[in-house]
Image (cartoon, rainbow, N blue to C red; front, side, top):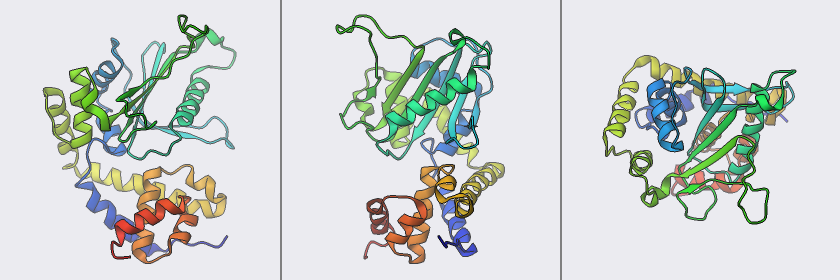
Length: 291
């Protein structure tokens, strides 16, 4: 397939990124992962969302990439955290776009965490307790619930849990008003409407604004978007899907918007970005309201 991304497209994308930088909030995966690199803040968020006590955590890794085999699909986790003794591992994902694959994505992330943490020759009992948290800006399962936590049982009466040392929790940020815990509600409300309402969210808001004034933060953001764009270009030579699977879904949306602004047809944009044609047509209505 002959497909070239002109340098003018990169320049167009950089203009988009410069405009978006000033508008970014904690709900953006780049900002979120950077703020969560503060161990104290990350620990407080984990304790708030999981209702567990954590004595200490290793320095959180932002955008951690796990790929066990060269031919396998790798994953890039927004925030990866491990306790010093390795007994518990945490992954926090911020999902601004819902793809209807969240359950399968969580399953795959769980498998990658296990492969990454179980050394060759170790026993299965050495697997750590893992927690996967998805902060979804929209309802991931369309049941209008504020929190989804799938559970498994070994008996038909659901009295005996099937304990494989894993927990997966999906927070539906859009339904924050239905959350009973006041601390969690304030945190999700801040993600939703960007208005801090307690000491913790005010501290988070201050950290976000300070980050956006640091030139290095802006440079890192551009570098991250540039890298994702390069992955898209590499897809031409490596197999387009191989390039796409490394880039963030949000970047595909941004790339599609730039293509549409450049005047390309939705069908071509869908082919080049791997997005559904219906999604691209919705973006076209945003980019070109009169079309």
